[in-house]
Length: 362
Ligand code: AGP
Image (cartoon, rainbow, N blue to C red; front, top):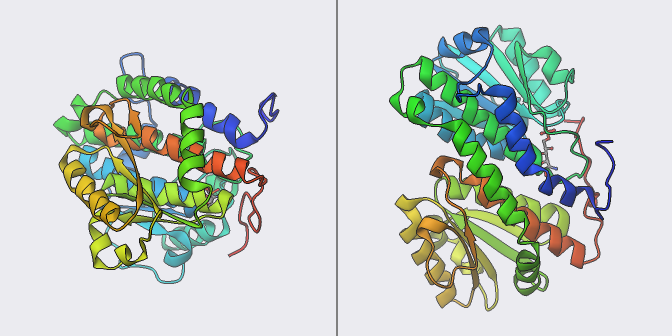
């Protein structure tokens, strides 16, 4: 039974561990043996006809959209905006002539996101819902649906839905990029990459003892913590911080590391945990010097770097995959850091206070 916790103390840990298989399942479902995307032609044509993509979501799904923007722009060369659904619904940005909407929603029931879809349908614009729940409201009401096939996600803190959303966005961006004649999409071997991601995720979840020790050293005793990075690493910082706040009640924030000196660095005190993501060659050196700046002000810094960019003393070294897909790996230690901080504080990891799994009020 998929909803059985088995020997796991909490669903969240089970769902973190399921991620390698979720990656494999998505590759099997949406890619041919030779790695060609198998996506409904009509959907691809509808997306091809658009002059701009609008990704809409809440919370973790919004964060998956921030990665999707990079994937669609780089692989398919189509301008992409990402919006928080509760904002978009009541302050609609100016739209392009031919918008196409992508709703990211694990549950398919989030009221804020549905409100946007109702408006989109009223205006007659085409839309796609990417969801984990077949026949959910947003799935039924959108023009197209793609399922995440991640299996039920029961812990309030979303984990495997985030990585599934990103992997499916990558497949879709590749499909769209290929029909748009983008060389970068043709050369992007998404099947092989998702295989590497699955193996890499497994290596990370096998390092639980190391990650738990880091959670104990860095996060257990601090009321606040910061995740920093640039570009894609910044987008992952936002998700990493959300995980930590919602289940461990540490006041965590994700920042673009270059912005620190414009204000945030004033928050750094002796022992403040600052965790840096270093997975993008272009910005690795910059993020490292931003970490140094916080260290000089007393921060307790931790580095999560990918192998090819790692240096002596990095706390966690991640296997290398295509830089565009590094979020699929870098988020995993952040999920586990949040998990162990919550667990060792004796909190209810799966059911944090004040939160519901699916938010069906606006
Ligand atoms: C994530 O850990 C959250 N609990 C929350 O942010 C969630 O992602 C958000 O409510 C959106 O839900 P959905 O994906 O089901 O629409």
